[in-house]
Amino acid sequence: MALEVTKEPGILEKKESELRAAFLYQVSNIPGGEKINRCIQCGTCTGSCPVSYTMDIPPREIIALFRAGDIESILASRTIWTCASCYACTVRCPMGIKVTDILYALKRMAMDNNLFPKRFPVFVLSKSFVSLTNLFGRSYEIGLLVAFYLRTNPLKLFKMMPLGYRLWRRGRIGILPKRIKQRRQLSAILREAEIMEMIVPVIASSSSGVHRQRSFPA
Amino acid sequence: MSYIYYPGCSLESSAKSYDRSTRWVFNKLGQELVELEDWNCCGATMYMSIKETISLALSARNLALAERLKGDIVAPCSSCYTILNKTNHVLEENFILREKVNQSLKKVGLKYNLTTKVRHPLDVLVNDIGIETIKAKTEYGLNRLRIAPYYGCQIVRPDGFFDDKENPKTMDRLFQALGAKITYFPVKLRCCGGMLMTTFQDVALKLNKEILECAVENKADCLITTCPLCQINLDAYQGQINKKYGYSIKMPVLFFTQLLAYAMGASKEEAGFDQNLVPVGENILGGLT
View 1 (tube, helix red, strand yellow):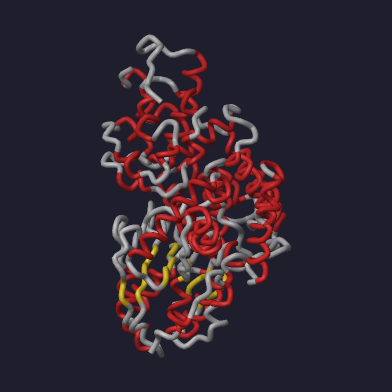
View 2 (cartoon, rainbow over the protein chains, first blue to last red):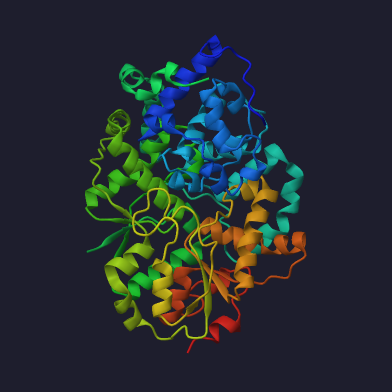
């Protein structure tokens, strides 16, 4: 997708500036997150990415769009959902930008703002994973896959059965979930962390260098 | 020194052979591996990308529990290894998140002081125990075996600290010392797609195809890996890859500890060969002398 700058330089819509503030807060949580300012648009991230050929907006363009003040397009893209978390971009970036972590931050924002198709597979998988893990304290592999296929593509469940059977015969599928003993303790931690998640400290938004919007050329 | 063992969820179900062989190898070397009492899921990549503070608190519970025992965590699953290390890293650098996480742990009387180190068994075996000690314990040489060492993404990237991020050599050195021939294998760090096998299967099949192709072209007898997800993608989906691309690849994909255990005298069951979908044939087992 080509970069289209339709807005006047330096002036952001209300929604865009809200998104931007939320994004900058998320980025300020990443150790070294402010380095996103330093991008030289060399394209090493895109070149290193094993799945960039499937992305509508490759990683380098994500950063360019952010600078151009168009976070909305980023949040609606496939890119943040196809990342396989291999960290090749992060390790190779000559400017030390944590590209993978930035994509995570964008993913969280897309979810918070409901900016993606509801039945999007990655979202369904992640959501199911989180609720099963909260319930049992451990990941429940087969339950996760069944829940995922039921919600996205029930037919696929039947197609997967022969493979599932072969894995089961070799003892590689635990039919029942494993649970931790102190599930109450874990839920107490998670409940408290959920409250903590919502607290946005003032200090984070003023101390971070990424907050000066004017320093980004349009 | 005893190590605190954090098997992780995969090693309880789809990668039991990894669990079995890792315990066997450590036992044979006389190293105590104490399983962390009532550990919970580290949250993996999926949790981290949805909820930040909650996922950090989830994995910090393990680190806090291990801290009481005063020892290094040994985490065989690459994803657990990365997430636990990443939690340490983020909490060290970001005091707000550290406070938030400790506030959550305080609810149940836990506290985490950032002193738990997270290690990978490959790191412990080679750098603590030493290749020479391992070699002295082996019963078979791996003489005629050609191995493609597949590290996968998350063991050296992004926060792994025991090997090079572009060309890791730890596994190469270990198996070379045991007599195996390490094949030319430039895709040793290429991503297998991870969970994309579930969400965007076409993409993941292509990534795995390229890894298998490279191993076949370089005449490897088997692939060895360190990650449960890589193993299941390359092993269980090999049939589908063959079907889709018209190949007839039959490449056994082993956890490095399986091969190590076998060389040290474990039986096939102890090494967990019965769990591999692509059978581990006589060309491998017969090659040991």
